[in-house]
Length: 150
Image (cartoon, rainbow, N blue to C red; front, side, top):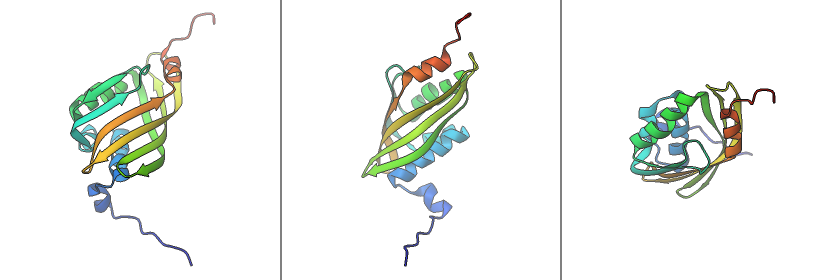
């Protein structure tokens, strides 16, 4: 005899304050390019940190600040930027997502495929903090034009 688990109804997922559900909605909104839905997952005082060495390194605040300085900027330099959320590890309000970035740099035409880890803190159904961990050398390599004759 096994355990059965019914999938939550779409309306339940859309309104769920569970940390993993909030984070998943953020990834879905990002992949769809729906910045309004993405901002709806972020707390008004969110702190969003892109790793040192990443092209957009720094800490951004407010939902609009995050989407304007991160998502919209990525769209200017990369085609088909996607964060594939593969594995979730949840401990209370902490959600760590093991993921992959895939994209093509518009200037170089080079593809990017990099493993990443994202740490989210979710309180009251909103993301209050985000920190990115990524191999920034892979990102730089995809964004650097090939050297002629190399």
